[in-house]
Structures are given as C-alpha cells and as structure tokens.
Length: 254
Length: 353
Image 1 (cartoon, chains in turn red, green):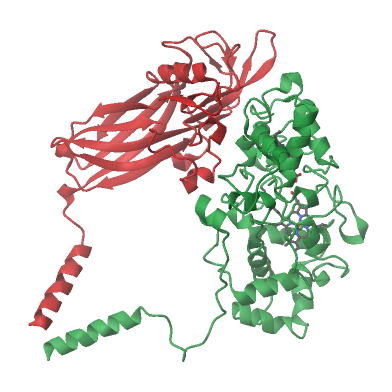
Image 2 (cartoon, rainbow over the protein chains, first blue to last red):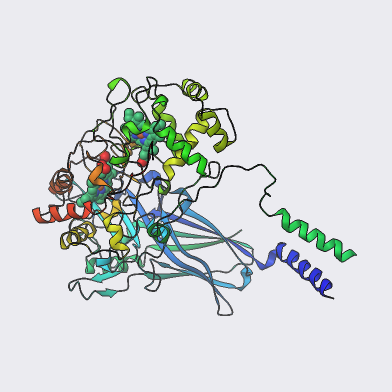
C-alpha cells in the first residue's frame, strides 16, 4: 500500500515536470523604445545636437536610464498578476531594451497591463535592490534615499552660445528646506493599456517620447533648470507632471 | 518484486546525483571566497567564471606567479613590481617602470574588488575583456615584462616545483599561457578590500568624525561635490560605477582612452572610474598620474575642469571651472575620502607569507 502510494506520488512528480498545456500560458515580449516627437531614436542618436525642445533649445542626449516598476496584468476576474517587479532601461545597453516573460493565464482573461514610472513609496526603500545598487542608481539619504526614476543627461546650447551640461534626473520629489524633517510628494505615476487578445503571444511596446519631458503642462527651459534638479522640489513636481504625456503603450498579438 | 526494482532504481537515481565518492580521482580543493557582509548585502554576486573556478591550489599558484620575476624577459620584473601589496597593488610612480627601466604610458591601477567589475572590462580604457585576458598583456608588453609566452612557459616548465603546482591546480603538467593567466586571475579575484574605517562605520563599529561626516555630505550633495553619481555610495560600497567617463582633465587628449578602443569619437577622453578605496596608498592619481595629492584632485573638481565635447554632463559646473568648494569643504571632503582607505589591505600577501 505504502509502495503503491509512493509510485503514484513519483508519477505525479514526473507529470508536474512536463510542460503544461499551451492555452494556459501567455508569453509576453516587453519592448522599451524611445523617440523624439514621434521619430524613433536609438543609441546611435546619442551625443549629437540633433534635438530641439519646445522652448527652442538645441540639445544632445548622452545618457538615458529610467526605471519602470510593478509591471502587472489585470484580469477580467479582478485579480492582478505580477509580470516584473522592476526594470531598468538603459539606452546604451541593448539587452535592457527587451525582456521576455511568461504567465500562467490565458490571454482572453487578460484585460489590461499597467505599470509605474519610478517606484511607489513602498518599493522605494533605501539600498534594498542589489542589482540597482550595483549600477549606482541610488538617491542620497539626505534626499530621502531610495532610487532614481530617471537619468537623462546631455548638453544644450545656452543663451550665451556655450555648450552647457544638463542633468534631468527624476526622483521622489522632496522638500528639504528642513533637513531634519523632509517633506515628500509622490512623483511616480501609473500608466495602463487595455489588452484584447486571444493569442498566446503578446508584444507590449512601451515608448518614451523624450521631447514630452520638456512640455505639457510645463514648458521647460534648460537655461533656467538644467542641473541640481534632484534637491529641487518644484522641479521634481514639474518633471512628474510633464511625464504623464511621455509614455505610450502599444499591444500586438502574434 | 516490481516495487523493489522500482525503489532500487530510485535509489540509483538519487545517488547518481551525489558528489563523486572518495575512491575517485580528487581534483583541486574549491576555494571558499569570503565575501564581506557589506558586499553580500548591497551588491550582486561577484563574477566568477565557470571555466576558471577558484581553487586553493589555483589561488596559491597565482600568488606565486604574481611575485615571480621570471615572468619577465630579463628576470627583473614581476607583476608585483608595479602592483605592490603595500600600495594596494599599485605603485608610487605616475607611470610605471617596466623592463630595462622603460617608462610606460599610464598609471598602474590598484588591484582589489575586481570580481565585482560586472561588465568585466579591465584597464583604464576597458580594452581587456576579463581578468584572464588582462593578464596576457603585461607579460608580452615590450615596455612591461617584454617576454614571449613560449619563453615564459619554457622557464616555468624547467623549474623543479611549478609543473607539480600546475598539475595540482589544473590537472596538467604542461604549462602554457592559458593556465598561467587562469592562475593569476584566480589570485586577483581573492584580493578584496572592505575593512576601511568607513566600512566599520557602516557596520556600526565606529563613528565618523564631524569632518568626515561633512565630507560625506559634500560627496553626496548634488549642490556641492556630487561625486556619488560616478563613484558610488554607502549602497554601492565598491566606490566606483566601473563605467567610462571624461571627468574634465583635458580639452585635447594625449590619450584617447575608451575612444581608441571603440573607435567612436564620442568616447574620446573617457576612462574607467577608479574606486576611491585605498586612496592614501594609490597616489599619484588619474590615468596618467598627473596629480600627486588628493588636494590637487579636489582642486581639479572644484575649479580646474577643462571643457571638451565629451566631458561628462555630470561635470555640471564646467563653465564655472567646477563645483567651487570652500577651503573647509575641500578639507572635509578629503577627510572623508581618507576614511575609505583600509590600513591593513595587502598585508600577509606575497612571498614568505
């Protein structure tokens, strides 16, 4: 009897190892693309003064890294399925521009995908993600700690006709006028896109239109706000507001 | 009966997965790399290639080779001639002296925590794509050890002990460049520095002085030093991003750095960010050793920046010359930088120890 149970048990174990049926999984390809006013850009577009912002300032991009988090699916039965806790995009790292994920749900049960730009406050704990520490993505403790949301660095032509650096860095907005009592305002934001698909493979393309960081609702002048934006409470709030029109999500079934 | 067979089969399966029994040939002993708690807590695991696992025998052999002058053509230069243990495995010269007293082109880099260089790009310009690959260069470099691999292999093969040591480490008596560089790389991966006063502060074992505390604040403050974007923080205790930047040393480049490797003019003048650990023993500073003191380095960032097309945008006050620190802030920043130096690192390593 015991022996029979044992063999039944090992049979179950073996079965568990075989692939589950095709229809119960959905494969996702997440793609992170970047554009400037609708024109796609790539790492090849770095370093040259080929961009002009809404305020008319000519600029180059030398580095672009940004963090997306809490990437998850919403199902028609109201539950949420996590896809990936966070993803750091680095325009100079090809492998960061795409990631493949599999879930154990059928695509017809999926209603939408949603994610955050940056970390929400619960996730944004100081120093807890080794892979983000390892690429120096941290925010100093004097600004509340945690992590950057974005680093967009480059140079622009200032009014004096010189090239001047800009560091358009996004973090959780913090008012440090009283260093003993930091005041925060949320600057992460959510984006969502509905999914209507019956195929088992779905491509989600999340595009960042970089030009949108500099307009709508706040017209941005690098001339006045180019560097030391991290400790600048007002600047962080404006960056977050402008960010809401930066991203667009496309869904393709294949 | 059927069940008995089944169970026997199962047992057979299970034991097949176990490690080789004592009757079989013993390979080298795995080396237990001691990872400092600060690193294991804050960082991802070090780069330890599966085709060159650390072993007791391999590491010991690598150490012996590192200090052996017979790797050079005239028998006068070892790796340690330019990478001295008491200098955190760098040397005191702006550019090192190689075979026949020839000056090289760059400042000898210190050697520690290199298993945490995740992109695995070594040298100032990232030309070497692993520690093993890096070790190929100095032996045959005409201005460093000036030897040929055939000659090195022959010299060591004729030695009374080396063939046995290679057999114990790599299972072969035949010595060649591959096993030599593997052993050197193994030894280098065990050189870990994480015992500086600032580490002890992070571990709750000591306090910072008020000046060190202010220095740390300047280092982390985007409005003052803003050093952390490239040189790490308490959350990245390597104190480097191991990435390539132009920190504003020159307007015209005598040495193109990364640009000479990639061929991309946008990389001209970029060099790998050095760790700020053990600075009290790695002077002079920068890829060409142009600065003798930390005061000179800090003055550079404060008011000595030189503009160029590729200067990093994080050198944000380049049009004002630099971040303009006060005399007090400069002194405090240096007090903090010194707290990242580990007074005991390098002790007990080398011949006779």
